[in-house]
Structures are given as C-alpha cells and as structure tokens.
Amino acid sequence: MALIEIKDISKHFGGLKAVDQVSISIEKGQIYGLIGPNGAGKSTLFNCVAGLYPPTSGKVIYDGEDITGWKPWNVCRKGLARTFQIVKPFQKRTVLYNVMVGSFLKTSNPSEARDRAMEVLKRFNLADKWNILAGNLTIADRKRLEIARAMATEPDVLLLDESMAGLRPNEVDETLDEIRKIRDSGVTIFMIEHIMRAIMTVSDRITVIQFGKKIMDGTPQEVANDERVIKAYLGESYGAA
Image (cartoon, rainbow, N blue to C red):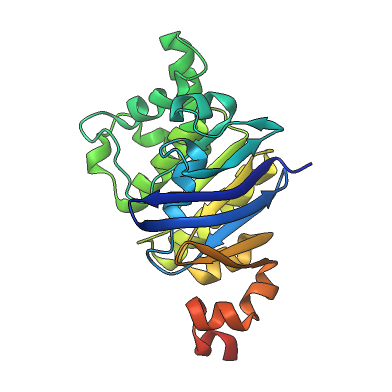
C-alpha cells in the first residue's frame, strides 16, 4: 500500500481549474518529483496535500487514513511537513528561534525544544549561526533553515517546494546531498523543482503536470524521453541531449 495516495484531486478558483483530477501514488522511502511549467498547478497541489487549501474534489490518503481538508497543523502533527517556494523566516528572530518553532510541535518544554532545534541545526550545518538573525542569512542558508524548521517537527514525509531555486551549482549539489541524507534517515520526500539536473538525478519517480492536468509519470529516464513532456516542458534541446 502506498504511503500517500492523491486521488483525482481538483482545485478550482472560480472558473479556473488550477488542478484538474490529478492522481499520484507515493511509496514509503521514495523521493518523488513533481515538475511542470510555471503556473501548471504544482504548488496548488502541494497546498491541497498539506492542508492549506481544501480541494474542490478528490481525496488525499495518508498511511491509509483520509486527511482530505485537514487543517495544516493537523496534517503536520500527522507527520507531513512542508517548505515554501518563497522562504519567509521570522527575520528579526534568531536561527535557533526559527527552528524551535518546529520543535514545539512535539513538546511544550522550552528546554526540550531548544535541544531538539540545536540537534537539527548541527545536522544542517547551521549550529554556528544559531544566534544570527534569520534576516541576515544568505539565500542558501535561508533555504537550509526552511528545511531545518520542517525537519524539527520530526516528519515522516517532507514536501519540498523549489528548495534549490536561486542557488549556485555547488549549493544545489550540497542540497541534493542533504535531501538524500533525509531520505536515508527514513523520511519520504515529495518535491517540486525546476532545476532539471537536480530533480532528474535525485528522484525515484516523477509526475509531470501541465495546465493542472497530469500528462505523464514514470522514472526520470522515462519522463526525459517522453515526447509529451519534451514538447510541454523540457524542450526539444533537452530531448536531443
């Protein structure tokens, strides 16, 4: 049985069908990619899974339980944490404070939350910056902080929304290593990414959506060689490569 079943999810905003009957099945331990052109509905689908938007129709099944329409905090307590495409830390608070926000999901004890947050900061090479204001971090460290805050909730599933956007090539490589380590620790990953060399390298399977509809899913190699995907998103030059 799949860990996450997204069954015929649709999300309409008035007459706009942002997501139109998309189904995805994600196995435990996978890194599952979601790609498509800008405006394809990727983040909207994430928001339906994470509880930010109630879907217009369809279901989200997690570990055999229907969590469709749950509030975000209840989804997070269930074990699904997410990052956002545009990172918005508490800029006038320290790095430690930002990660403690995630730690408090599992404890009301400030000392325990701090200890947990420091463990996570060490894991993501941010421990030496614990007392720096989040607003003073580089974009790479802000992206890392966003992941660290989500991981402080001790999730079973991590939803990553363009966590490598705006990073230099060496920073992308470092993030890919971190993503693999997260997966190896037992966390299933569902991720959106526009950097093709990154998502093609790290994903076990990929779904492609366009205009809110799924047009293909398969292994990275199958997706890269699919004519529909090449025409809709990757471009002829990618197929030739």
